Image (cartoon, rainbow, N blue to C red; front, side):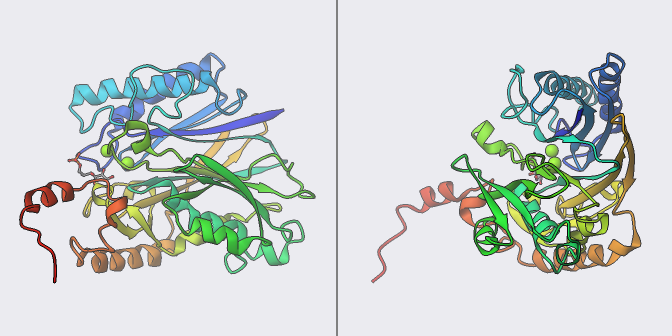
Length: 371
Ligand code: F6R
Ligand code: MG
Ligand code: MG
């Protein structure tokens, strides 16, 4: 029998500003999910935060896109929003873009990563929770985990992984997807996913012959684009991901290794700047400097045979990631010194805020032809 793991998150209020989630919101969401667990809807759950995003991690047997589970998440966010309003928290309910729930939270504001899987004899997974950045921030690390032999030794030396993996890549502007095979199509894959604002890795699948069935994902990323939902800027769609590990998949350390390099991602201040993705323990998942820099939390779990979440282990709470944090701070300083200049500030078409039309309007009579 299959188990579904659902990670659903929303920003329903920050404390202070857009820095972090107030504990009272976490408590309220826990009450809602706890009730659902008693009623048998959920097998297990865990509620946490990453920056200003409230994070629900749930296991159940309802499959992906279940209206019951999505409705439950919606309910938890609504209830947490009430608390956020009482406390006067900042941007209360900001990611709940529609008033009414209509069967699925996708398109309503929250971000979702879910996978329905047949549990292996032992099922280690990592959930990733990013703040102040966008889904494309996962392209580089997910590619490295499942396709880069310089990251993942198993691709070279584990017979179960040697055939590589398949990548489901979404064009988030044209709402199209394509499945591509690595390593055969590696350069084509990179041609797409290097454009991380447009082409995002949605899922990774094993190939035929792998111990895991071909149609079961081994990694999944949330790909919601909030501005498409809202039609105007309402914050970056801080993404989440679920990655399975070990036994013919990247080892736990191969899953974490890409984050030892704090690569540049877009987001940060006003969703309009490039900055390093800093791997942090939960206690530091609280963006401060220039509303950042963007942060990544990794939680480790074993799923018990009944589907219980055995964890979390706060995986970046480890001195092995100190250098990455140090490097991220150096990059932060370096990027910040560019002030309003690209490539710290995003190019015009990717900015979430702009005054340019107004400035151009003001100057329209003063612009004259060059000779
Ligand atoms: C970035 C983010 C913050 C806000 C900034 C301005 O994703 O959430 O950097 O964009 O704090 O926020 P407002 O416009 O709400 O004052
Ligand atoms: Mg916020
Ligand atoms: Mg956020």
